[in-house]
Length: 194
Image (cartoon, rainbow, N blue to C red; front, side):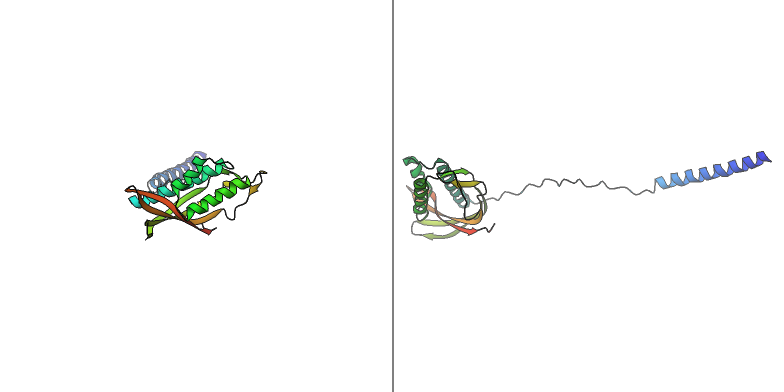
């Protein structure tokens, strides 16, 4: 009888093991597919670069030359050469030319120096009218001077009125010796607007 009990208990165990095994085999095909977990790093999507028309691009280039000249001259302060002063004439026309000449005369007189670089990101370039000597183009964007400062003759940093501004440069397209020339003629700031 003991054998029968062992046989019966053993048979019951085998039946349970067999049923569980069959159930497991049956469920293998029923398991849902697990989708891969998305990566925590976003995929790199390049920011599209605007395509500018030729006159728009030429106006943007004029602004870039103006900014480069302004920064270069600022770094040469307090002493500017005749050639440095001529660079102002090569990149500007009035009224901005007179304003820039006055600014640099003031900086030189006060013994200012400068360090760092500003950043200007163009949002738009468009025709904004004309005047007697040519077409006017507006180049607008965000001007950031968080890394560009002036220092007085004692080395004291001069805090600017603003660190960021939405700025529009008015560029004059004029003919010089029958060749198109672009000069910055005005600039307008909306302080702390970008």
